[in-house]
Length: 185
Image 1 (cartoon, rainbow, N blue to C red):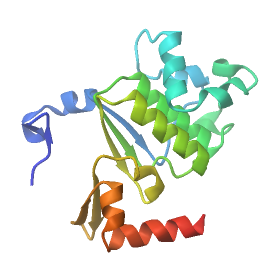
Image 2 (tube, rainbow, N blue to C red):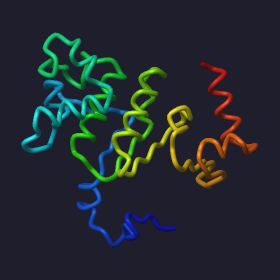
Image 3 (cartoon, rainbow, N blue to C red):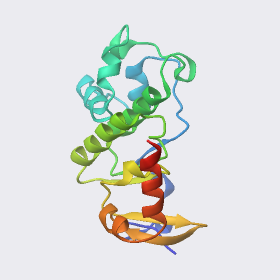
């Protein structure tokens, strides 16, 4: 019945403190009619070029950014109209990364990525943020296989819990859904 951060009940922590320590990326990406650089650095003061590039690297975005006409200075249009869905998501992930929060919440934000890009991105996140908490909400189970802990919900209740290997060894919802999704690829 409680959510705790470092042992502290979140009801005892200010909302500003919680928000200040979280980087959130949702499925519906909000980008501005500005450059890729400014969209990654959005709302951060004095972000260095190195920090922006490192965030883009971790978000697996640098290659496509460098392929745009003006690199990081490319204007992306209103709501990122000049980018694909996967590119928009990677810019938004870069924005969360450049903030350097202690907790990341990725809410179904890998849905527009192809399998190869998703795999590289998850690998980057796991190696780059070993000391961070990453919460991934997803219907695509392929992005969860490296998670330390997977919680399977059905009708708002926990029905299974464990890492990928443990849940694959168990009969049940996770295993059935995972193999169904793998067949569809």
